[in-house]
Image (cartoon, rainbow, N blue to C red):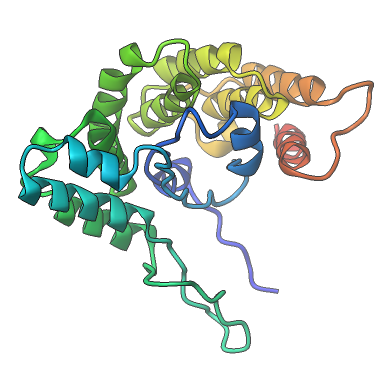
Length: 260
């Protein structure tokens, strides 16, 4: 079995992809959280861009110049192209994909930014948020934070606010602002309604204080309390959750507790 290479907290955060642009009308937050969970154990999978109801046709029809409209459509097209990593073993080829793909999230981010050159300032805010998220994939977390802060006041009380708060907390972590990140995870935990979301907020808060993860604000007691709250909140009737994203998150919290 190949030896697993341990990654730093910042490397894990860098693997978080761009913000997910979600359609409020077509999904419930509960379903979205359960389908698009991102485990905090080891590497974190790149997140595909979901832009649903903000379709290319709507963006194009709202544009006053056809050239800009076509360029905008190209940005969304590149962002929606899946990432399929090449296989590292000849006997296990990557899954077949319909249409073009990118080998890495970095390549996709670069393609999106190239397509957005010259039109970003004229684009709808939803596209600016998408572009900023791709910049975060390349390590430009301040751009993502600024875009999220510009959008948040306009989506207060809507499901999209919760997704943006998760992205904001992640960006603050990457920018080495642990106190602000902890406060943002607390807001996220208050607003999210799913057991997975609430457990995620506690686990990520624990990570901010976990000395074994190299936390700058190391506090084993705070980390332990956060992980224990994550486990307790996820167990209903003194039973562990059924196999799935929530159970994986509970296992992650317990593993981190065992190392404190």
